[in-house]
Image (cartoon, rainbow, N blue to C red):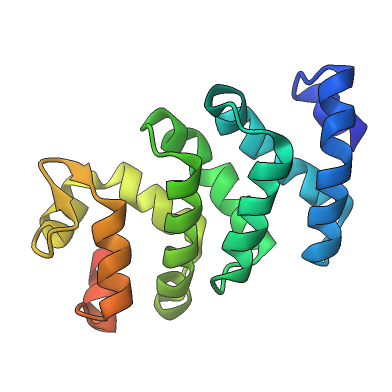
Length: 169
């Protein structure tokens, strides 16, 4: 764990502050400490320093996202590694990224895919996706509305077949 944080450029004090919340995340989600440390490293490197969040807050939000959806820690690790950097560069907040990953985990399960692939498709194939999701008001003028996406998922106004079409892009 300490080596993971050192390789990511964290100093001694940052590393020591991250150990306890990382251990708590691992225990709460029944995963390996090494996996929890990689997740903490991804989240804090991509969003934590700039957003001014502390590690406890970030990992608590991660734990809640996993518990409030069918998302598990392995899905979240894949989402971070596949699309975390692009989401951060696209100015998608940490909370929006977690909400998107949580919401898409349900779509991914139905579409037989994974969250990382879905997020990558959103970022890479934007024009096609904009055409399809623009019809539902989820993408307007090239901007993805996370709230509209989550609202559409909640009210079931889009059928499973329509979700499959959108995310098969």
